[in-house]
Length: 274
Image (tube, rainbow, N blue to C red; front, side, top):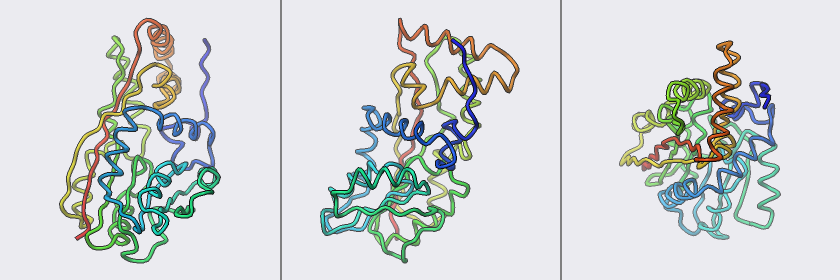
């Protein structure tokens, strides 16, 4: 099978920085598929529960993507509350609005989450989920969360640590090279491990941390979630070697006999605004 390189803005590790300039459909498909994975659903339940949303609350999802969690929050805050999704992608928000048009408790705002369009202490709770890995200034987002969440309100930050990314394949040397290339393609690949101290420095208290494993259970799932084919292609171009391409072909063949799964650890930080 011939493997071709996609433009950098279509590569999942980089494309979420500015969705509307890249392969929007590919990134939307990734988000939709992710939302169907059992391991993904388990950690999502932990995130929403930790936010402690109550009927009548104003709550926000920063970097809301297609708005799946905004709809879930809307059901928890009820018709008297407000579930707000904020995202920089107009394409994602257009899809989110179409999906949520029957919900009166939902609002979507096109804005940079590094400068939120809310008054001080407007929100009862807030979350940012797998978005800080892409933004230019994660600390600005955390400061904005601190500013806009009221005293006693909960914030939840869930981010991967790409230093924990692995693929179950016997060629460990090539797995390490592919994983490192993918890791280095993110703006903030270690944000998961850095979050606790960053939240503390932003002023939050009572910070609790737990890990959640996001698992893609097959070669196909790994490619849809972690873009491993394009990672191998880009690695081959960078190193001027066909070895990554041979590895990806072998991994695809192995998957027919024994699933080639992959995983990364997400760090869930739950904190309170004093």
